[in-house]
Amino acid sequence: MIGSQLDQKTILITGASSGLGEATARFLAKNGSQIALCDIAVERGEALAKEICDEGGRAHFFPLNVTSEDEVKTTFAKVKEELGAIHVAVNNAGVDHALKPLADLDGDMYHRVMDINVKGVWLCMKYEIEHMIAQGGGQIINVASVAGLRAAPLMSIYSASKFAVVGLTKTAAREYVKQNIRINAVCPAVIRTPMAEHVLSESPEMFDRILKSNPMRRLGEPIEVASTIAWLCSDHPSFITGETFAIDGGLTA
Ligand SMILES: NC(=O)c1ccc[n+]([C@@H]2O[C@H](COP(=O)([O-])OP(=O)(O)OC[C@H]3O[C@@H](n4cnc5c(N)ncnc54)[C@H](O)[C@@H]3O)[C@@H](O)[C@H]2O)c1
Image (tube, rainbow, N blue to C red):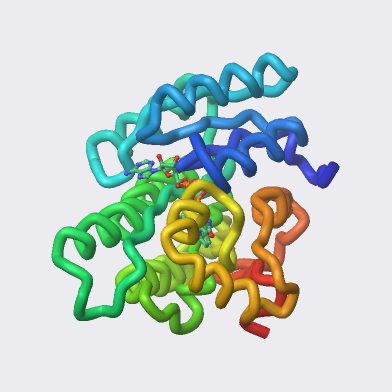
């Protein structure tokens, strides 16, 4: 148990139906938080909410496409109305693209990745911040990547999108510090989720290179990201804002 008020918080998570979002939702629900699961994948999200509730937790699913301003606005208003508050938001929804050098990527890939990873995070932050200002403060945790901290060969658009998430995080943290909103980002290396497994299954050489280049010689596990996010959701890191937290086995040290 992490404690420090987690059991008194309502926490909104985007991209909550799978991978890191799902692991974070499960971990926080076990620590007593009320969770608003938001995702474009409705069936998986509803099943997860039911499973968490069956295990004694508190979770509610809200369908959401983070690229639609109308949906973000109305869904967050609904979360606030039905669950009472949005104390913390975890902006986790994101996608990657095929592993290719920059000149081999195309405009469709660019727009898809930038729309979901950058516009989606910006839109969510915009409406989360509005609710948080009205309620006197809050916390936002954005899910970036080590690809937002340094070069990520064959993932240039993804890398650009995650550098943008770090920029949104640091700048907004300074802009809203007086309104009692703390904003931080986590930057995981490759973590064993459906997203990573899909990419790595297509390129065994890449998988091998990732394992060899990591000081711990392994992938990260979703729980290792979920528990770091949960700590950031708690009141423990009360003097930390605008920071990035690499969760990477020492890769960027
Ligand atoms: N897995 C990794 O190795 C890794 C490493 C670093 C960062 N990340 C980041 O972590 C986050 C989660 O990744 P994951 O590995 O859990 O992936 P995942 O594919 O398992 O889960 C992503 C979730 O986002 C949802 N989603 C996609 N587009 C959406 C949209 N438009 N609106 C709402 N929801 C949408 C999907 O339905 C899915 O449930 C992403 O932002 C990813 O870039 C992942």
